[in-house]
Image (cartoon, rainbow, N blue to C red; front, side, top):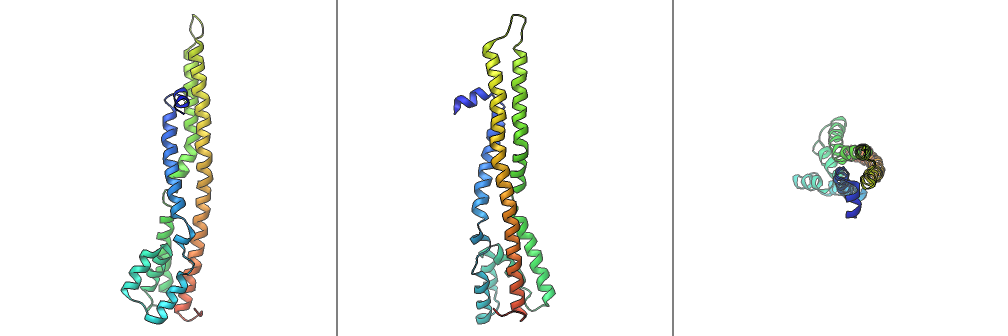
Length: 202
């Protein structure tokens, strides 16, 4: 591995740095964006049951807020349980926008890495070509310098694509995942509002 890095020259370090960040972001988002963590399937039934038995309390709202993003949305809606249905829906929508922003955290950075990695590879290619042309002398070509320049050009191009392709795949995957989770949370929140205001049975 070190031999490849050495052959690729100093431009490869930009790509290595980008790849480390990308792996960290992908790992973090894979853990954070689990459906069971964001949108627990039994949470709505648990909340409705708690409402029927004990009503809304400060402890209940505090626990819900810490439970999950969906719990945070429920808690904000239940804070206005004595208000009209429209007020309750508005508070839920505001909390939903905040949670959606939280779910999208780091995705812009991952998308940026996916976009600039091929450019960083191209930069390394240009550096390699400059070394190749710099090896042209009146006395002739230096095979060692030519070989090094070609290595810099090819390795950087390849590594740029190696970083960019998985980053773009996971970026698209996470974007779709966030959209799906947002729709699911919205549906669950609407059900809660309808149950609270007697339009739906729990």
